[in-house]
Length: 268
Image (cartoon, rainbow, N blue to C red):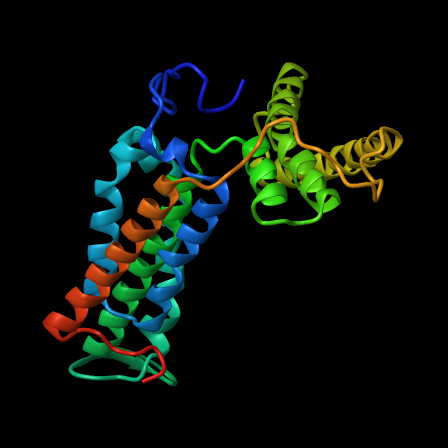
């Protein structure tokens, strides 16, 4: 069962109906993610990032993801985005009113504006990945990489096998938590417990990876013989529409920054 065919989850992760973005080829989604990210590196300003975020959020109904689901998946990026702005806040070239300074560090109007712009830029860069690949099935992605992008089958199958094991890590982590709690050693020493469990999970990953590699080699997945694919993966007119939509979003975002006079090249 693929993510597209899966029933609706309690947290609203998937919709029972097929979303518009589900018909876009995974390779097109990769190109679209780059298209929605790379142009943002040309400028550091608040306007282009805000417009890009607003337009991307407006596309949520096309993805089949719930707004609450998108917010939950964005939380780590939102929490750690200010970390990216700290260096700008403290060490950017001062401009305007200087509110605080110590040695090489200084907080001024210019550094505050740059820090806010960098934080928003991080969010604008992370949001497309969540929207585009939130419902993408790993098998469909592998089919597209092999048939459309023409990547080597050995590489594609290795990536697919690794992707399929990611969910097992979460199950292993939960099992270790429950086991430690049942033995009465899971309620204290959170930091020490985290590192010890992480080491155990690393051991599990190495052992599982070794067994998986041997099993795939035994079944001929490492062979250099050209492979056939059970499900065809092709490009359709919808892929062109998606790319045109991504170009429009970036054009509007950068155009809005240029119109209000906030656009500034990153190297200027």
